[in-house]
Amino acid sequence: MSNRERGVALVTGASSGIGLATARALQRNGYRVFGTSRKPMADTSDGVTMLVCDVTDDRSVQNVVDDVVSRAGRIDLLVNNAGIGLLGGAEESSAAQAKALFDVNVFGVVRLTNAILPVMRRQRKGRIINLSSILGLIPAPFNALYASTKHAIEGYSESLDHEVRTQGIRVVLVEPGVTRTSFEENLTRADQPLAVYDTVRADAETLMREIVETGDAPEIVADMVVKAANATAPKRRYTAGKAAGQVRFIRRFLPESFVDKNLRKFNRLPA
Image 1 (cartoon, helix red, strand yellow):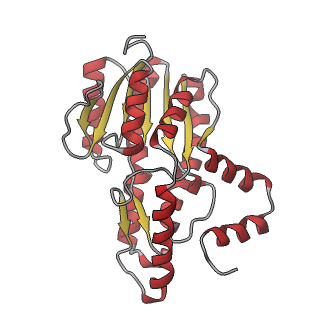
Image 2 (cartoon, one colour; image 1 turned 120 degrees about the horizontal axis):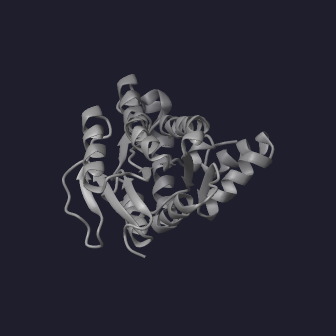
Image 3 (tube, one colour; image 1 turned 90 degrees about the vertical axis):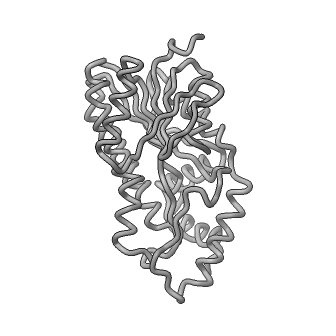
């Protein structure tokens, strides 16, 4: 299959990790792929064209969409993957830090989507895949603000899908579990740390490092994105990885008291 048969894909945050694995998987699957990064990068050896995009800047977002359309004539698939993490107690982050997190993880998705919807509407065809997380389904001690951004993406994506479905456009969620990516790469720490949280915050960071080391390979998430991109009748959400599937089942079907107890146990918090 040639790299034009599937269509044209734009993947944000494609410099490494899930984004890079996704861009490469789509390219292998027959898409012509454009990836974005915050800083200039060379095109990948396997044919992914890299472009600069700051998802917090309206003009930068519009420029990258215009650039892809100028080069390829259309955009059939948008994968909103760019994002950052934040570790710390909820009250340890200033309002400014919380806003900056939402500006990337939520409003970055909104900016790209708003810029691309007119393109897809003209085509009468398009698919938008938003990378959520299992933390969009469950509470996440010491990741409260990050989890909030993923809960927001869940509600935004499902609602938008209903709005644009009659225009030939579908919006789909992919929910990874813990993935083996660079722990430090996209992680921010709270800017107003409080001594009362020092011990439990350090324990939370240790736990996160441990589970990242044994997490799913980025390629597992990438393969699920490809599946969601190519589905004739896509589901609302695709869970990527065994652990993520288990969490989704537990959250949906088991009693809240059971979920609460086991969440605290997993996070090494007292009952």
